[in-house]
Image 1 (cartoon, helix red, strand yellow):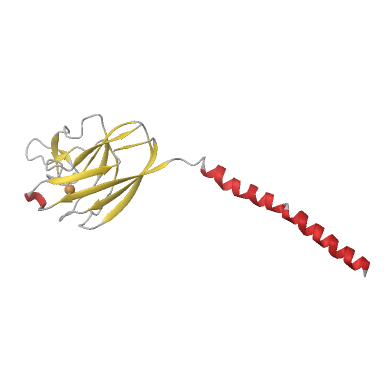
Image 2: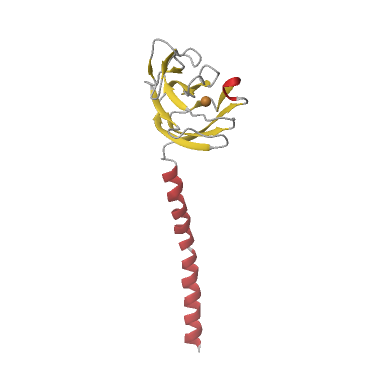
Length: 171
Ligand SMILES: [Cu+2]
């Protein structure tokens, strides 16, 4: 009988040492914490495309936030307007409202008359095909964006000129 009691005491002692195992569980929690701190920073930027009467009125492209740290940037683009739109990120030092409208066609190419689009030579990322219909949201990510100036535009015919352009800065 005493020997059995001693055995029970031994078990209690064993389970008490098992409690020490909780420390290793805490250590286990630290592992994902430290690994997540080494991940590349990803910033989410919202781009809202809009118009109220299509080509018959002004159009808007709003970027928020307008500045992000270097790294991967995920653009969440929403069309709240009445017609199709798109969003294109250009890496350029030309001011967002000073890009020359000297292109036309799809894909855009330089023209001497009838221009209604800006050039896309500095395109580093976009919503792609098909264009976003009203009410549609689409997401795309540009990896390793570096410090500098960018412009975000909708380059469907006439849309840039109607106001679909905004500056964006990394750094
Ligand atoms: Cu547009």
